[in-house]
Length: 444
Image (tube, rainbow, N blue to C red):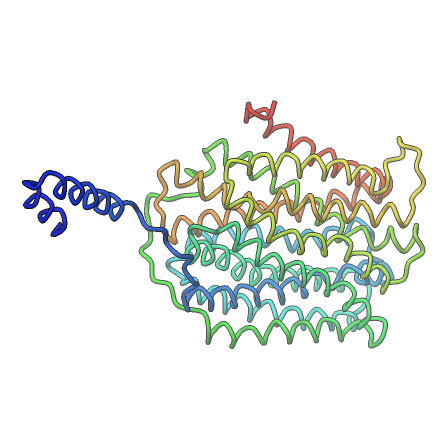
């Protein structure tokens, strides 16, 4: 301003005044343009939150994934049918569904930090207890105790996961897909280490040790999260409800995509190990290594797809459609379907698991961010209450798929075979993609 006034004062001298006036105006205009904001570093709260979420994802997924290589075969030794094994896997997801809806609705009243800590404590205790079920008698008693332990474990798991999604979105509102992609690295690591670790501990030390070891690992995250996780204060919102959220067609279509993804994963948890042991002649330890073909590409690609989703929000629908199509095709060739007249081979199974890992990641990463954006577009407040509803719905739909996949997949596998059951999962993924593409005209 001083330069500008001086120029006006000296403008009586035409030559000197004009030059000074022009130079001063250029400086004023240049100073008014927005300066480039340097990349801000993460705050202490963000770093602590990210550390806490990573520990939750890693330890929870190890506990969840250790059952795959050996539990189905161990249950068969106790006289449990394939359909009932699928139901034991599926009941975990069903209870997670109910827990996610209830706890997501009341996350503000309960407290996000308390939900995480209490959920981890309950889940770790049930994991340890599950390791002693081989001591009970065969048949009905074994099955009933499996159901009870898995149900309580699922409630604890739903509390921790539902709250962790909401907290992540609260602390990182502008980069939720990137943060979720980063956290999925630790989800992938847990899924990678869980099956081979569980298979090795089972072969080396027996049934109990895998559950005791991973349960204690999960319990170690309880004091860690008590110490490093910040507290979150929020006011409950009386206007937000699951019913209002579910009236949005876009939300329902994204939920269908999430359902188809988790159904495929749940199906593989309950059936892949027996298929690999009986058809591919693999040991329990080798089955654990086989499952790395699914979890490794998922964990590796997650941060990449997360960054892409946040940087280019307009292509999230394309990511879901392309990833869903790849998932559908890979499930059809996983067996493969008998109509292709291709014999089951180890190299083909591994290749299809790798494709499933990448395609599931491409489809799944944008979904949560899209659900939050849709909620905000339809008048939901940008607060913890809304994030609790969205994360609760997301976890509930994911759990519904994890119940449907093992239960229906186990039944079809028992009635027909693994090849046809995998084809059904592929058809479900294709139906979800087709439904979304019909609703989003640009993809037709």
